[in-house]
Image (cartoon, rainbow, N blue to C red; front, side):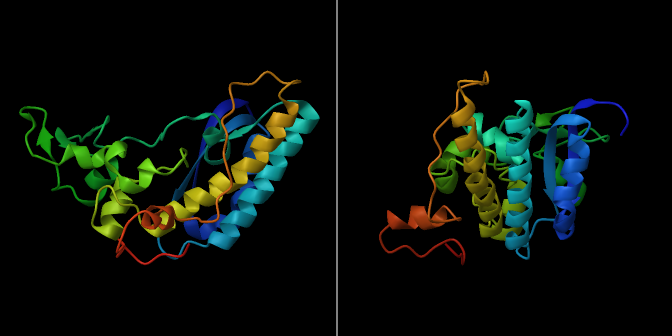
Amino acid sequence: MDSFQENVILNINSDEIKELEKGVKTLFKNSDRINLNITGLDKNFNEEEYRLQMKKISEFLIKELENNGVLKELNLLTDTIFLDKHENCMAGENTIIISPKEKIYTCCAEYSNNPDEFIGDLERGISKDYSKRLYETKNSNLCRICDAYQCKNCVYINRLYTNEINVSPSFQCRKSHIERDISIDILEKLKLLSEEIELPALREIKREDYLDPISKFSEGVENFIGYYKYNK
């Protein structure tokens, strides 16, 4: 990449996480923002390696901030510092997908993997009841009590691994809370430099003793059975 790009998109498969730091640093030579998308996410996701890679990236971002007074942005680490609500793709809630055959889908993953699962077409509009309320973040028991606002909360992954639209599998929540935890290091540095650098309003993020918010949810539920097996 020879020319400077304000914003770039980096797609990396979950089994290539060991190359994450290297790829991010290379792209930041010619960009100030990277939108990172981890593909192929499943229960075998290497959390320890991901934390290590993201920690190294956060240290790089902090060093850039200290030396140059510029906050380079990696969406999964820096966005949550400034957000005040969940910001996923809003599939089925605020966005829909229209295929080349004029079929309507709740999200692009549904179109790619389940082409017969359309909810309507351009001629008739949305003609199937797809339980839109289940796609709304406010109706998710887990998301309502979670402030990992950068989380993608992929509804396709939800349905694939928990058979529920609005219940995230543990590995997706834990990934997002690793990001949330590491973002606090960047937030603390920003607070120290806030008098020297003009920044948008920063929010408070408290460290938690869990990675999966279902452990917090279960504390307030009598005779809790649980949606799935999880590690705190």
